[in-house]
Figure 1 (cartoon, rainbow, N blue to C red):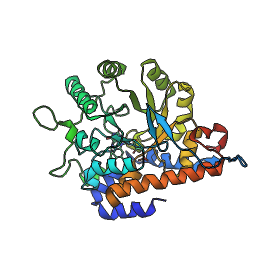
Figure 2 (figure 1 turned 30 degrees about the vertical axis):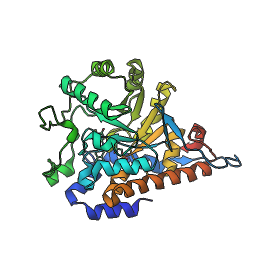
Figure 3 (figure 1 turned 45 degrees about the vertical axis):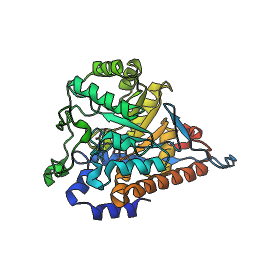
Figure 4 (figure 1 turned 90 degrees about the horizontal axis):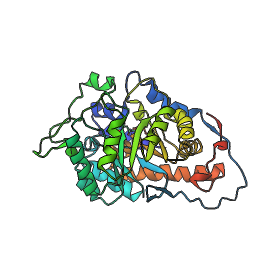
Length: 341
Ligand SMILES: Cc1cc2nc3c(=O)[nH]c(=O)nc-3n(C[C@H](O)[C@H](O)[C@H](O)COP(=O)(O)O)c2cc1C
């Protein structure tokens, strides 16, 4: 479905930048497992359900989305296209869904917000709590609707493509614009192996925004997240870019959804490429999915229009898949519709 856009993106990007966007950690086993696990799923459709036109709308934290498909936080969009995150935000707004802005965005959040669509902000809690608090104030003021704390990154994954390409720094003129401190200097994003649940409690104490945790795979952590007042979970292995050898996202989903038992929205990302993948994720307990790399392909291939096109293709494919499994709404994707996983 995305083959042409992906090919065009590859042509347009420098090989080292393509590898940065496309690659995973280690031998990329987990990255392949994400799509491989969806490839193995077999749906068990119902017939004669008189679904009529489908209704894909989904509400998360008070925001209505056109479909249960959000844009995952990915870094460095100006490396993919000169319009960067502004283009991604426009394309996402046109598709009627939510953009999760990466902490490593190359555009200030105020400019992203000006594109007009709803957006959330992804955060790595920094050991410098003062800086983190100031950043939270900044994104709140700019209109952010939820915070997504990435918790699968106590250290950086071993990205061997980047090592081979010696890709370590952004080209001159590009920077992580939301990491500027009060002096205007850009800080490095710190990965913090010292982070524990008290960090989440601290964050809850300084903001009223809903907090989601991104990168939860173990059901015991899902239970702890509920106990710590987190408002949503994102089942994710970071697109296979952190622990190579980690379980595929869709394989981790059912146990997490069971542990949560409907107390919070559960989202999933990693390897979602088709409408049938979204149906499988919904049937296995997700309230919505996020897509990472396909959005980058759209962005690199065609800016805002490319992003809009990727999301429209996926949502159209989801609409068709819903009809074909006999469901009228996302909530109609029940576990019995998955025969093999
Ligand atoms: C190029 C790239 C950059 C990413 N940057 C971030 C990031 O800054 N923060 C984060 O939490 N996740 C980041 N991710 C992970 C995505 O949010 C998401 O978990 C993953 O891409 C989903 O898998 P998919 O690409 O197979 O759809 C990144 C992924 C890619 C491919």
